[in-house]
Length: 239
Ligand code: GDP
Image (cartoon, rainbow, N blue to C red):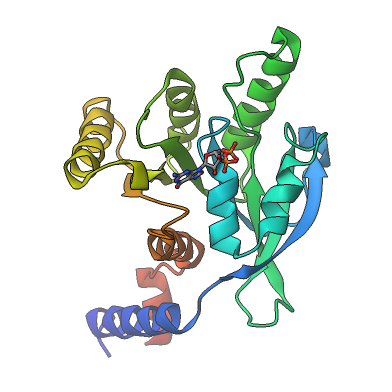
């Protein structure tokens, strides 16, 4: 078998595997709330973080993604809104082997927050985003009517320095007509390209209309399965 044939065979088997296996976001379960980096889970399992300005629609997206209102309720419980909330997810139908965390980051951009607390969140968020090896990608939610606010850019800059992918979800798309939807998608893509961002994707989303959930799931699944890379070394060993 040539190296080329081997790579092709491996590629086909990985694609087949990816199509048959999917993470079951509907079975997400609350795992832990943390308020400092030292308390982050020790497990070396993959994490996907979700962030956005307060009121952008993060809880509504989590509700739709996980098909339960309890998770977002948990995130909104007083005392937990400014913490990092971990939810476990699994790629088995009964959630018996949770092997990934969905990480709900605190909403940013509250108007009336004392500077000391604001500085704590920004420090917590940026440290987490930059220094967490388990993190495989970031979902950034922005209201499709008000995208790319200054703090969104701050998050984008922090995270893009890691080289990991960012998926931008433009929420509340039901508030836009078709022309506006096309325009905002174009605006966000072209602005980020012009600003030198490369590893990102963008989609529209509507919680009440349940539009865009499959797109979010497929991006998350692609991140979770993307480490099955094929190296020449593996192929040569198989010869
Ligand atoms: P969070 O603060 O980012 O968690 O935002 P929420 O999910 O709590 O949403 C803030 C407000 O926006 C709530 O009143 C939601 O009902 C509303 N909202 C969220 N997503 C959508 C959406 O896709 N369409 C519409 N029309 N309203 C939304």
